[in-house]
Image (cartoon, rainbow, N blue to C red; front, top):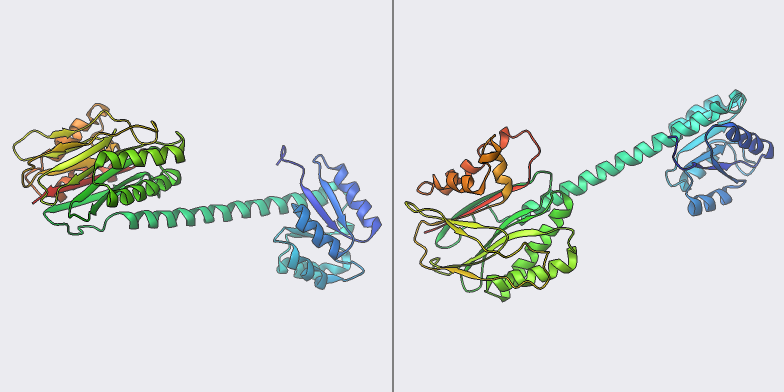
Length: 377
């Protein structure tokens, strides 16, 4: 605890001799303390509300009230601050009852022959209190993370939700409780089908919050605009104002025509791939940058016509590469596409399982990883 700011101690005591004694013991300590004195309960309550001391040092023998009644009054306005009680030899039973009521420690006045007899009780009480606050903060943070995780999971499309003329499957595995990856499918008013996948830089709560904002903007824009490039341009403009280069997001956004034979797409630094049996995979790329970097960037819409039945749109985030091989040289986009393409004539669930096959064997630090597969029918 050495090096921390001087603890603020509020002494509630109306006996001048006891006040002087406490001041003397604290001054003799190697550690400095900031001592304030309240002679009445009213003064004590006002001091706690305005100064928020680190610890309350309470003498149980005030003239205006005494014993446990006085302690009950202090507990009612102490704002859960730690309390150490000062008492006399004849008050041992009272001291035990005070501990049961919630005080951190009791110090018998006549036992104080060295400053440590008082300061150790004070320091330990403050340390226990700070540790309890830290534990409560950890629990509160974990609860917030669990809530964020549940919310994030509910934002993913319902597994195997039916859409006309396609089959699809997807999987999202954040590196922590929450992450910056997401994928989505959305039926548009004209029966077109919007598909998207994104990877926000970093992982944890911050990227997860940005992921939710990005998803909301994309969904809102998709209802009023059917051009993927315009949707990304508007989304990028909003994100640039909000994140100011603290994060960025790669994103692929595509729209299948109502008959699913045409795909228009725009890419913000995030490739997609079209897989077809007996053909080489078709990369769907662009030179446009990730979202959140260039404010006024105009993203370009590209079009793939005459998509054959049983073609598969493969979208994944780069976290997938971690599971491809123990050999770093094998962790490439080309290898991921090559593995998926081996299942281009099989089911898309087999393709998805192949990409995530080694996730449970990966014991190192990894990135968020997501995959979305959409096969035309």
